[in-house]
Image (cartoon, rainbow, N blue to C red):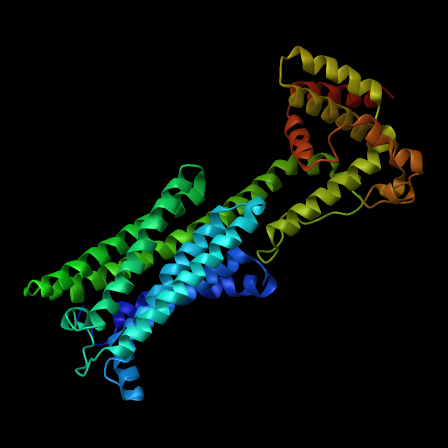
Length: 413
């Protein structure tokens, strides 16, 4: 691609540099993470490829070194390193902790082969002769020049081999996973296939030169465009699993927060302290959920002296009649016992707890046996998923009947 300003290379290179910037903090915190190191190496080499392939960069390197086409072995070395980094990443990414030693062995072999090819590329350039500077068509211009011809074929073969292996590994692995990782692997595989198309065009242009034909446009225009596109597609493929994982975790936390709100409201008056559910936008969802669960546990401790095992057994029998799952039956029984205890607590709490703050008889002041009472009656509060099930169960007819019965008993007193 005849791009004197290098935008076709600088733009995707900058895009990949931004992606790399998002991974550097994690690498700083976990320098021994092989997978993370492989990702950063791949991104670094790909950035190097794009910036070194830009016409202004190549012209500057040639000018600074005083050697015509000195940029060529640098570009080919970075392309080879990029090809090896692709395989390294797939090796570490697709292997679990149990296969770490095997992955390390394959990684060492891949690194050794990549280093050997890079050395060979540079040696062949030194043995060859490239007196005329070619910034966009060196592959075809020197396609028949001794040693330079071999250098070109060597880097193209290395690039093609990496593309074939990477495509095969990603496609095979994609059949075993789901969700964002599967979509990311599909994009990476597409990126590899685009890279293979780049190799086909390059080989075609070089072969045409051997046949005394001019197909240089395949190399200088279309192959370069495919290289840029493949980098963008593969870059998105590497980012997508990370983004989807974060979004899924974020969505799960918010869903958990809203699922716990009915239980929080049920225990609001009995809580040792209260949080503002309408917290500012700077409060992370993780902190909100932690505060919510902490307050719920405080509320359960406050009403624990009034938990009645007989009430829970009655609720358990009624819940079983509705033919629900075992988890739902337990959740309804716990929720019914808790709702009954909240009403009793509200009737018998001391006057100094009317404001909702814990007084001397609050959770901190409960005797040891009373503090453990909820563990002997309820089965779910010690598990986050159990709290969510109990919160959902508060809307059950069984729970409502136990709450109404406790309120009716209170009104008769």
